[in-house]
Length: 177
Image 1 (cartoon, rainbow, N blue to C red):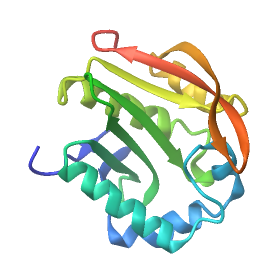
Image 2 (image 1 turned 135 degrees about the vertical axis):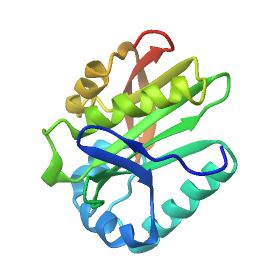
Image 3 (image 1 turned 90 degrees about the vertical axis):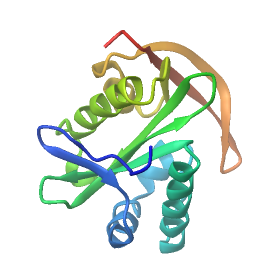
Image 4 (image 1 turned 180 degrees about the horizontal axis):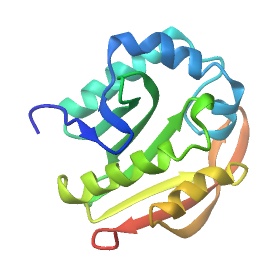
């Protein structure tokens, strides 16, 4: 794909991350809960972390290995992010976060449905999977709402801050939505 896609849903615009998003990303991810609920968001989250993440996201798109979208309202304000990352063998991993002011409003579910559809219809994946920590059941609820099914509990799968954590694995296959 030559140009990064822009996907519109009923309430959202999913588009590439931009330099102007950095202050908002840093402000959202300052809350310790993001680090506690994810395997790859550090605490404290710095501007340098955001710049590195934007660079990695751009390189993943250029190398055809990933798509990281800003989740935006119709006015273009960033609210969070969602991505699909190619894990070879025609499968991809779905990941997401959204700013606390936007929790429990269905935005991530709306964005995730659109991204899963994009992954199957435009990118031709056979399987899309996602994981969450057991202490973040809200993320699992999103996975269920978009049609994913619980596949396994990966025991002591992630080491973070010197501690081992289980991950709950969900997946959906092309043709199931």
